[in-house]
Image 1 (cartoon, rainbow, N blue to C red):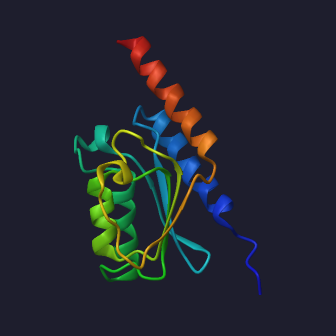
Image 2 (cartoon, rainbow, N blue to C red):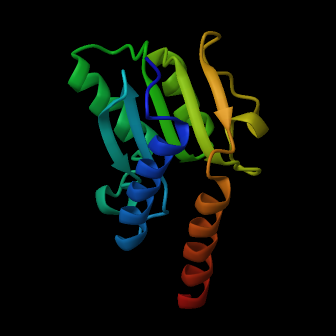
Length: 149
């Protein structure tokens, strides 16, 4: 049976999380982790709220999913995130052995691809899903922040 859920469906859920981050004054990045078409982790950037540079959406999602599953490995899981992971998050994804990474917008300055960080060899990557929507939200946030300063 073909699932009615696809990468676009779950990326929309990640974008909803990015909107929550935006409303809180956080850089608007959202993430969800899915296993068997079920969202097991849903979060967004919390670096400002927690005063923690490691509180990226992906890191929060990895921790939440691992707690849900009762183990540190995220095999058979997919991470949907609205911005290409940085090298810190890519390293954590490597160690979690996540099966699939789907991201929306590329990060030409700090993304793991630009910085040459490797994911686990078995991790499948899909990029560009709803990239325009994610980029628009990020740009709006950054323009507003610049205008406040």
